[in-house]
Structure formats: C-alpha cells, structure tokens
Image (cartoon, rainbow, N blue to C red):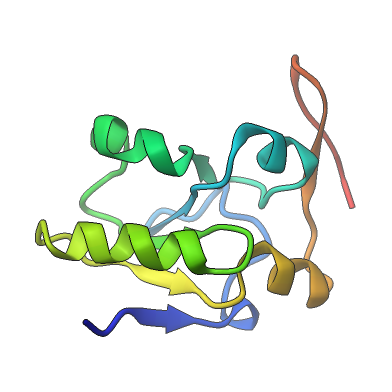
Length: 115
C-alpha cells in the first residue's frame, strides 16, 4: 500500500487559517505539550477511531507524529476504510530540524510561546 508523503518544507508554519487542509497530530498528550504545530488538530493515535468525526472530510488530511511511524500506521488503517491522507515525512523531528516554529504548552490553561 502506497502512502502519499509530503516534506515539511512544503507546509505552512501555521495551520490556524488554513481552510483546505487539516494537520492531524497523533502523538501523545505529553509530546503535544512539549511542542506542536500551531493550528494542528491533536488526537492521540489510539483515540482516532473513536474521534474520526472531528476530522473534516472536505479538507485534505495531513498526518504528523514524532518521526512518521504512527502516521503511516494510521494512514494504512484509514486507507482500508476509504479515507485518503498524506504523511508528513520525518514528523515533528523533521519539522524542528527544519527550524519551523512550534507552540509549547506552558500550563494546562492553553498554548504558550512559540519557539
């Protein structure tokens, strides 16, 4: 099964105002809190099947995790259900290595600062 991939360089730094694509971050809560893409949708991998209705089917689906492993597993699962998506190659490791900004949770009240 071929999974489409996209390099971080081809993505905007912030998904807050992106209307045609959704960036789904499937990492665990502690990973999300340590740094995530602004405007991404966070649903931990194990929760995705029960929360799939939170993903807008009319928007292009991009999936990101730490290094791409979980993204590939999820996209294979979704493909078997007729849902297409694209893996962000290298995940958040590649995102940060490219010098792209991340939001860090400073407390449970909400997003903190960008780095």
